[in-house]
Amino acid sequence: MRVIKQNNLRFESFQKSLPVLDKNGGAVKKLRLVVNSTDKDVISEPDTQNRFISIFDRYSAKINVLNDAHEIADLFSSVIKQVIPADEAEIFLLNKSQLNFEAVRKDSDQSLSRFINSAYKEGILDWIFDTGKPKSIPELSSYKLNERKFNYVLFPIAEGIENKGILLVLTSLQDLNEDSKDAQLIRMILNIA
Image (cartoon, rainbow, N blue to C red; front, side):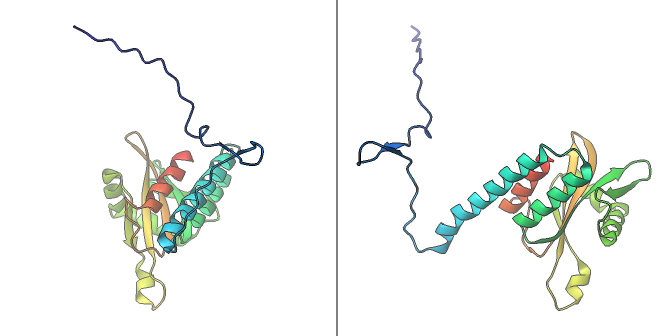
């Protein structure tokens, strides 16, 4: 014996089911989430998520109208600096004919280009491409001084199995690992570019 179940019911979306009637004459109002807590983590988490969503939304709207690679790289750099405390954010593309990496933006810091190309010659970028995950490398000159400590965080850019480039982020964050929310957001922003 077989039971055939036909489910032809349709339900309105959850968002549309949220409006409620007002007590004063039936005007429609939207429900709001009210947090009655003094715990800073509970209150700041939705604010952080809302900030990320608004940054992401503005970025995706702006990038759709841009055609120039330099303008896209400038926008990308400014968005990364809004998301995490970054001093530099630069995209480097692999130039296969010269076997080196070149910055997309022409006004990029030359010390970043030297670092990327020396990391490429030493095989560090091959390791990053093989793992497919972002890696953090200490910026050694900042560790010698008694100032803020910086790290280079390198995100691989690949299309299928072909390595295209590297996103370099110079940041003071010490714990930007591949599973952190910041790293995931950077990957999402990078996927739009």
